[in-house]
Image 1 (cartoon, rainbow, N blue to C red):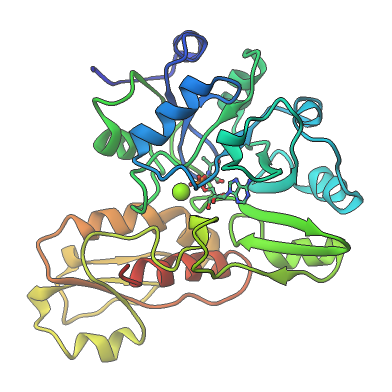
Image 2 (image 1 turned 120 degrees about the vertical axis):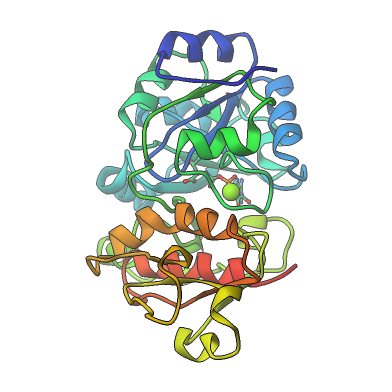
Length: 319
Ligand code: TXA
Ligand code: MG
């Protein structure tokens, strides 16, 4: 199959209406999208992504009006979050309505729903008669794509169309939030900072690390490059290797002992938003070098930094 990259909304609409899959831009990462109401499209998503069927999919819609029919209840705290952060890098786990099949939720009574903050994709969603189920557009377990070219490099030949919406501006996946009784539960740290959520709706409980295969985004090893990826004190790590053997991914320091082509600073300006924006592209670039391993360090653990550190840690764990 020939995979075209383009900006034509009509093409994306036609393919999706026919039941085919289209990669779509969002503000977090690119998604591999199909008709959330079509069993065949859902099955194709799992197949193309090589994703186990027990890993449920996020359903994307254009507005709160689009979301209402997909769920049976929206808790007050969820309403506040939607009002503050949607469209945006936020996914809510809510009780699913009968419109959502067990295939999408992997048998869970809860559906993950999100209104993405990307103008082109919102326009696409408004022109479809169904919401879009979309996991990140990468093979299961590998680094998420933040450009159309990233998607083509990994899924080229398997899908007909990649809707090009430029660089994903946030760069890490959405924050996943659920509700258990009165409790707010964070299942994945992401583009909406936890501090902002707590400020709005009070304390949260974290359930972000798990060996429970019900939620593979929580798996310890995920978002992983192919090369060994070590996180820690870079200066100490560097001493164990010859300079030609390593690539270095730093927050914003440069190392004179390492060739320039083998190091990337995530945030030359020191901003966490820059680090998030650059993270997955930098991991990919370094993964493509002929070095033995990639050495990295944690970024300041506040705001977006918590989501970045989560990805660095999971990239460093070998399954
Ligand atoms: O930013 C994002 O959320 C991106 C863009 C494309 O929207 N999507 C994304 O999807 O990251 P994916 O499939 O790569 O990660 C979704 C995570 C998975 O860890 C999955 O297990 C969890 O959400 N998830 C989805 N539906 C769920 C459900 N019903 N219950 C619990 N976890 C769920
Ligand atoms: Mg993913």
